[in-house]
Image (tube, rainbow, N blue to C red; front, side):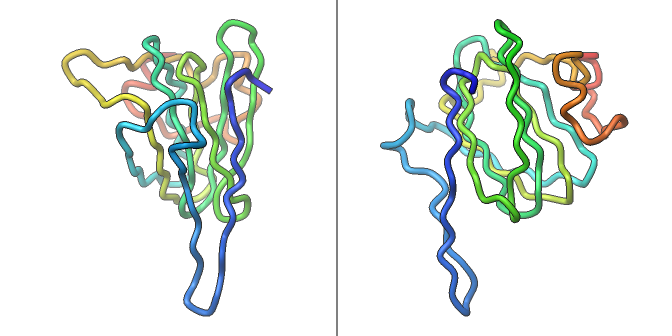
Length: 154
């Protein structure tokens, strides 16, 4: 497994009302969380690949639907992928030097906690093409829906 990447199984406690799940425990993470972001994506969207030179780490969790997480160790070329969400409640902690992204396998709500606050004046946001030959085979789609920024990385 990629050094520093953590796979955190999420336990669900269910009853007639629904369920409860603890998504993040600060004491269990290598760095403190500084910001949380919630994203809605339609099926077929790929967000990424992104990385952070100054070392922002991400904790990914799909809170509704399913996503495919893809991580690339830019130095070794080692990869990691896992489908997470409703059918596999897992959070993935990703050290920021690794390129990372996700594909919405269904319409989804995606939550990610980060270890640095976003600075619009000096963003630590860098991109690699989603179709980088080291990871292209890991996605389920060959024609993703991309943001302008992610498309420009190709």
